[in-house]
Length: 348
Image (cartoon, rainbow, N blue to C red; front, side, top):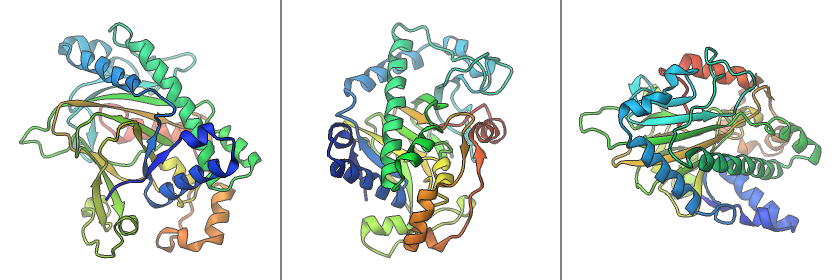
């Protein structure tokens, strides 16, 4: 089993509406069925750029512990900065990774307020410059993919502009994650099973195989596998749903893209944020960028999704009729950061 691979190049380069619509339709199908897909960005970004970022990450994580602790998130706003190995916790178990978190800069920073401090950068030469360049590219890519998703949902130009106004000042998050091999006596995960709770994740992954695992519910697994014999699934503490875990190994020129919980609200459950986890058995690095809504965005179900669900009832998973309540993204995020995760924020 494998996730779909979608090339963003035609959407970027073609002036032919039918070509752009074809790419948008691919993304819509991937979001509808899997919540995850590979996005080929070789027409958008030079592969040497993220490779350079991993070299810089390696330089930082190889520093002495006391040097890394100089930019500790504990001395800041509990969200921005460096987190030690096993400082993050998922499902009550320590995650076997260390990382640095950066967020969109804010006006009047105050490190006593959650999320409202200043980004803490390593003093390694070119580190800040190179990562800020990547952040700029990923912010622009977020708007590109959002436009394609709006087209795939059949949104009118006015509806797209309204949606764009909720993400045009994205409260983005950038993570740099270092994974040592899991100890033989470690009963947890490099990162435990979770759903992303924002908008879009663009993951540049190291070449380690069999590390990122994605849970495909039975319906999605059967679409890929062409069979209805799926019998295994989640343990009861994760919902007990039938399905399978598949690996999402790195593909050259691609980032792994997945949707977060805000897309569940926008589409009133038409799209689903998918469980994923990391079981890393070598020393390597992952660089996820989280393209999120504006901090003050009021996220509520979109009319375009309602039109699809009304015209195509088969698109509604298991005939579910749940209604998603609107949320203000910043309040939602603060609740996650301050209540759900030991040691600070949780983006993986």
